[in-house]
Image (cartoon, rainbow, N blue to C red; front, side, top):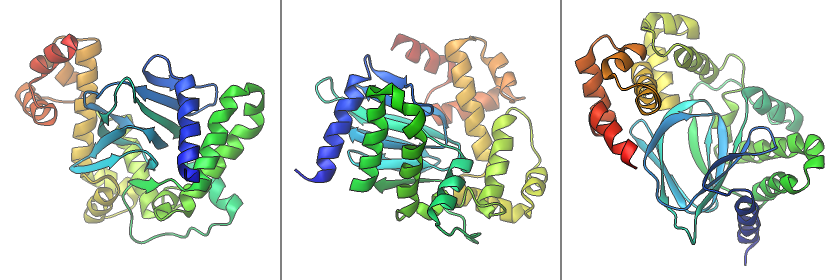
Length: 297
């Protein structure tokens, strides 16, 4: 048995001990979540936090715009900025459940890892996609296992959790996609400017933005904003905002409201027919039909 397989097995046992029943489980370590699913899931649309997620068992598919990211045991996926995605567990059974660990982080923590490890990160002219998949090395797996093992010895969490988290970021930064993570922490980089625009859109997604206002915030021309925004997110600012609106509309319809017109208005749509068309295009059925189906599951 290889070292990587041994570490994945150890991590799977740690996750299973701390995930009953199925679902996403917060832990006593800030920003660390353990995930278990015993069956293939429905596609779930949500805003993915800035995070590192590693799978030790099962498989998952994540859609960012028109791009599909599929990953399984030993793979990790990183989102270096908040992104609207649709995810689905595509391989899981009660005997062999989907098991994963998610660690959220901030741009400041990336920058701290860069400074403390001496990695040189200058301003990059070309921005990179803010989501990527990597193969977990033995060193990265070892750091992840040590972080998760702290759940068995809570008294050590205040001393070691931040150190192990920084080590995990270090190994990701050292990997082949490290530059995509670095770019979000470098002051003045095109990627950081796009991150600022993303934060603006997420904060007030129901409002109507003029593209010129967003370009001014990024200190870019309109054409440059469009190009770099799509390089980072795989979609235009308008498409990004539309996904946020439709995701929130679905949440409201499922959790709170049954009046489709009111929901459309609350998430920023002035036209009910337009809302219905775009909702149907994204989720595969009209708002009413989608809610009826989901509430039966």
